[in-house]
Length: 77
Image (tube, rainbow, N blue to C red):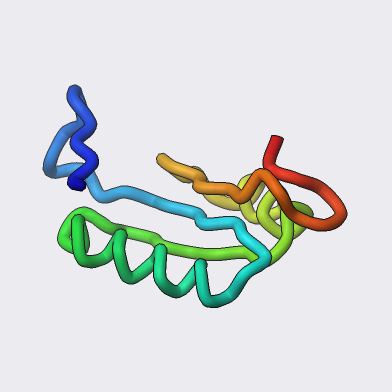
């Protein structure tokens, strides 16, 4: 299934952050994102904990953040 986002300018490069404590999932998800929209990706980063992800969100301006809702320490909710 292809995720289409209306009102998104096709020329805009996206900054994406993936936050999940499962490295296999992160790698698979990043590969999927790159397959679907690689030409529109400016920055694709990951964090393996919510704490690290929140720190990264303070440093960068992300268009999308995909975060696991069931992680140790702090969850995605």
